[in-house]
Length: 418
Image (tube, rainbow, N blue to C red; front, side, top):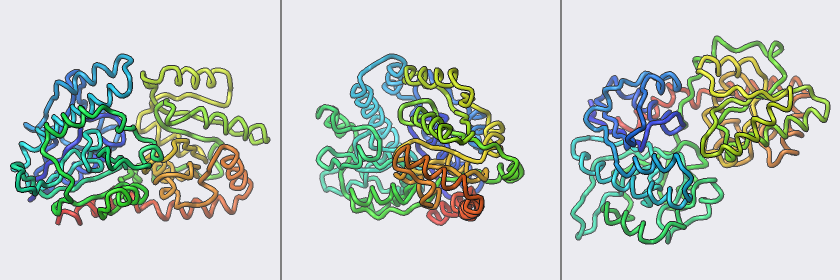
């Protein structure tokens, strides 16, 4: 039995927490697992809601004594409720996570292995998805971090200002390089860190796209382990193809990055070409993007072929995916896209932007990736008018879905530990 610490900055209904919960669930029966969380005061952790959403069964006692609350993170959570400049929010986030790293370092000696599931670039350190600095081997350093670490990464953000890399903008992630120098200085004072490669760290990414970006930036070998998709919950719910609705489903919170307006535009233009298709929009509104949400909701009210479903239960989401033929995703540079994997598992044909790790989920099938709205509509037309091609695409997608099943994820994870 291995004594394992799993770390994440906060627990939310998002992809980061989903992967974190899958890791804990895969390990908790065979090993001792503690979960270190940098949750803010005011943010409640509802384990049941998280488990229900992710289809996991993580035991709440894994929080143990390592549940930690950062007062500065509480300030960030409070500021998230009011309009503040992005740079202010990013600076607070960065310092908050640096404080989290100090807590992190103080308990490392109690563990045989650390699995970091968070994206440390918030702190400004040369790690991907992690909040743990490298093992400091300088003679002047007094803080030697020698606990073996698995850095599980999903966001290719680069950390040090002098190592700024173009993928920050290309990968649609926050720009941390405009933050004042004194914030970087403060973070480096809070945590002993250097840029040496830690021989005890294993770097893992959630897609070949993410792994390649990280390797290009830091020249550190990074392997890919796809995040798990609960394929099993779709197996008995799939509706036969000829009984499905000729419609699209898009899933994600209402935000400019998810860009639901582009999905609506695409469906409108498909209808202009004579295709009787419709669109279901699934996802929460986000208080940070109320203007954008209002635009989406107004579009839904003004048409009879676009429906806003809001947040659905896991059972409801499975049903709507299994009842429709097509999925549409409009997030550029998605690092993986669990919802795309769920669409595949539901037997759908999803269309995704030709960028990021999401192209790997659809096996880089040319008709399923698009560069712009016109390209999307042309690809849809080619697929929609060719029943044989539809069948072949679905066969290819379903045969490859095992790559990101829960069992495959657990086996790959154990191969790193044992």
